[in-house]
Length: 314
Length: 314
Image (cartoon, rainbow over the protein chains, first blue to last red):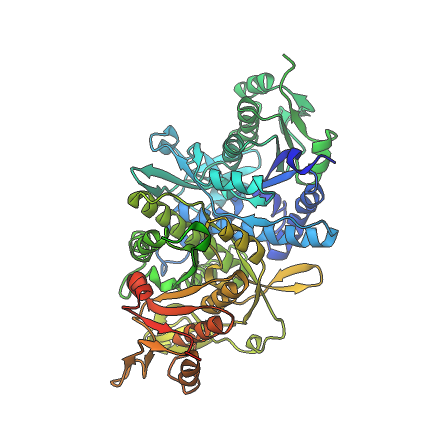
């Protein structure tokens, strides 16, 4: 085993739908059960790596939006606050599940924290002119969705869409870097981070949701991550996804992935930002990125599952 | 100024109603504005103390309950998750307001984190047999409240009440101790912490809300806090509160405070747990506790406002 100082830094980004599986209603016990699948693997990996966990929140932030729209008695809050709420919600679920898994395994326990994180975005980002990020439940037909909101078509069906600017910098990067340096396991950047803009000497939130994979790649760059794993609900990145010609990629260079991205193989708001985040990660100093399913994180790291995005041999 | 190592540890517990003032609807800009009042004072104090901030969540957790009850389309979640949501929500608001205040003042910036915290409670706590903790909006008359839920009468009116067990231990105490030792400003134990019970080698959440002042006193004991300030919406602890004979206490010993508590001067679910938390704090090694209004934290520390709970001279 490598010495403490040499342990590589591993960032695992969990999909917001790691908690709610297809066909489930999303009760709390279902969510905890689903979550244990990736988290137990992370617990087993914890002696070998310095670990950062990020997570999505698309289903959860969608639920909170529906709830607040159903309740005229309570003033509505912008997405920034709902994202913050999901950081508390999922941060707690991940942390307590990991705590329990570590106790179960009897792994010498690392200090473990789940941090609120906010992420600066650019107020001139063109994303503010159109909603593109799918959140909330998936509707089979357009007319099943609640009326009055923009929808986006995803491979699984229609979903409500919101504005999604690109992450510029993670406000807590210094803190996260220091905690990782001291061997804390850190859960952060939930839901892509709470989006804020910096105006002079103050931060102020914006009504948007940042893509969690792009935020994770930015965090990886700012904190110095070696290996980036995106754990999602499909086995990896595929060409012609969902068609008869669908074939999953075992390894791909960032250059080739970029070409596939440009030719539309990876849908927006779904596999697209994941592949883009991996390309970004390798461009900014990352060593290896893996897109794999939530139940194959360890196998993905071993190279026996998922899609490996590896720098091309020069 | 004392050297870094000698700085006393200050814990400031902010009331959940520090964000929503009487007569306000509770819009987000109102909440940020209200919050800046205590937070600017904390920013000014930050060069002199190692700082922990805790906060309440009674109005916010009440709003989330109302919202989820209005929306049958989304599965309802237990209070543990709603508390976690308020930790994200308020943790973000406090952290970003403090960040902005520190930038404004040009104070050399400390690392600053807002942590998800969960707190172990005892499954045999008698509190589980009856709801006593008021949350959510205040209703002038019983019939103004939504039907079907237990209500409790508070000095301000009727409020919905929930089960509130006592805090046994803060799960993240080791982490918080370490962060304070390294001069981080730590926001934690929001809403009294997410209540969990420990079953063998696992934690599991319970449908309850812990009192944030009692949780803060427990945290103070476990982390080693010197001064405990409870910042609330009244100027201090009063005898015969709300009556013609009302008189605010300037200083009081824990012994005398205990007698006043026993004779009913401090209402349950309001000033009662605050005074009890201060007594607890002094009993477990704390040096000084102050109950003061959110706009008089600095004055409370100077001794020119609020109620000082001081150990009696032996």
